[in-house]
Image (cartoon, rainbow, N blue to C red; front, top):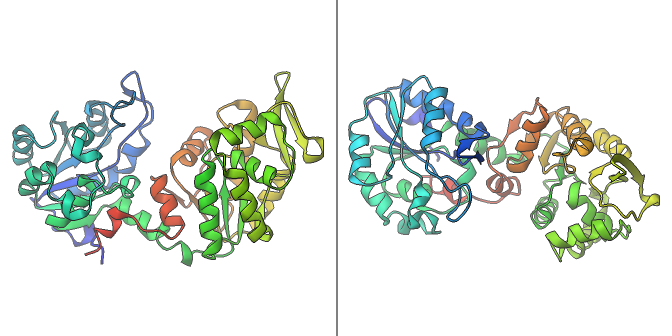
Amino acid sequence: MIRTLDDLDAEGAALGVRVDINSPLDDGSLSDDARLRAHVDTIQELCDRGARVALLAHQGRPGGDEFADLSVHADRLDELLEAPVDYCDSTFSSSARERIADLEDGSAVLLENTRFYSEEYMSLEPEEAADTHLVHKLAPELDAYVNDAFAAAHRSQPSIVGFPTVLPAYAGRVMEREIDVLGNIGESPEPRVYVLGGAKVDDSIDVARSVLERGLADAILTTGIVGNAFLLADGVSLGAASAAVVNERSHEAVKQAGDLLDDFSHRIYVPRDVAVERDGERVELDLDDLPAEEPAMDIGARTLAAYADILEDAGTAILNGPAGVFEDELFEEGTRELYKAATRAEMSIVGGGDTAAAMRSLGVEGFDHVSTGGGAALTMLTGGSLEGVEVLDQ
């Protein structure tokens, strides 16, 4: 049984709260605060209930351009919350432990980027994770642990799986909602329609095979580079430019897509037309008009109409990936209109990551659930398990 905040006696308690506020940065400033906003409910509730909140989070990857401290995140959380949020430039040193001890009831401190320490970048079993410096140093200062970082729940790292081994552990409100929706996808309204697009071809093909074999999907609508891979597998000559883009992403994609078409052709839908850029204009080409010298950048109107009909009759629509290069105004139409059609399903779910970013960029609203996770959401949507969720099940 996974305990939630409803089971937690928060008043006066020192809580380690893992959040996922890993965000895009522009010149050291936050360029998108969506992930911070997602955790406001959990943090505000705990502060309102008189807890002393020590926030744990990461930002970027070692060596990456966005591997940075969390000072700007703390400033933004302090603006978003009614409770005070301070910043500590250490994670588990004596100064960090003193900051936790000195917290007043109803206040929070954001500790430094957990990935500044090598242990946090290791994949460990929960017992091993509990034996790290991070957990050894911080756990004695805490009364309980709350995991609200669903987007990082597929990682077996100390801040995710170590603390629940030695402290009473609870799911925060974000984690609770994600588990309720994505963990019960097999009980969602039927028919279930998965829209698989974007550039992560191998991941999408793995998702398609998993949900088809498990009987979770009644229809798969392919778009983006994923759709182009299925078109090539179906014998459509897109042209050298489009084929090169697919092969750059995955040398095995076309073969794997072909295998899936052999097994599940009655449930997999491929684009009926594509859009290319020609002389600075959007030009839509039927499959009979191919191959084209230009790469396919979006689905066309015929595909959109066919997919919209399927989505509007869906019990559950699950979106993963855009329909094309939506960042270019010439090719935003397919993604925008496809997403709008999905909102008309009985239940509509956005699988996080690039899909959620596209939704926000295009201003599409009306979804029943927008996941905060990318990889974590895909794992649950395909019936898999997450280390960060399993360790909460006590």
